[in-house]
Image (cartoon, rainbow, N blue to C red; front, top):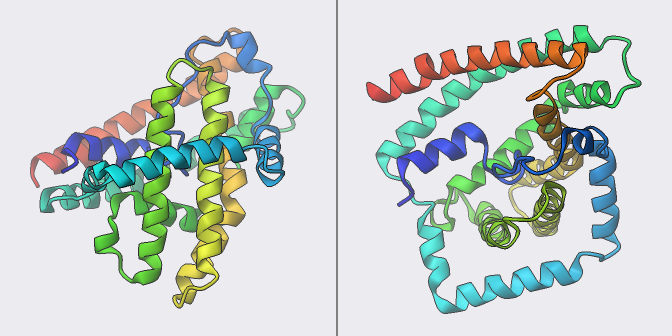
Length: 285
């Protein structure tokens, strides 16, 4: 059974594959390299072109071969059991969902303040990154991506119907491949790891899209379509947010210091909220 602490990490930090890059961070590149890196939309567009031109076929085939070996060995059953949750873990998910709703309100406030900083400022790369981070997806696309990410808390056995079971099975394979990749790419540069994570998730959504064509559940079919539509924009935002956080860790210019102060202020608000609305409720649950 997955421990309560790993459940907390998954829920709070979004280690879900689609909505976050599973804890990846920039640890080796200099701030100059980071500031000069490509924008998220350029990065994801390049990956998309490579994926659609079959440039990643060999990479995906190798991962799939490892996945099939895991299935045939019987070890994959142990991997699936990690998703089983106890009643206590389910209560944790409910508390975390409430906390996340409140957390989103803080992010809205933060983004409104950032808008004031970057108003009419679009030339510098840091401003472009902020515009990317504070931009929002259509609500239906965001909801669909959150639904797909939440599949990571389910097993095929507790799917609501046969259509959802197919999506969970695809997501299970994707999660294994990402875990397997992280072990192999632990010492690789951030951009290399990020690229491969996006490829795996891109391929997973493609499989879901193909599977959804025969779904009886039309609402679920629509969710998959919306998730596919919003995926590239969401991943581009994640790229820009990751790099922006690294830049403001050691701000040098006045504008970087201003942006860092805004992030710092709302980080403190988030920490306070976490103490009051998550830990306190968890202790009394």
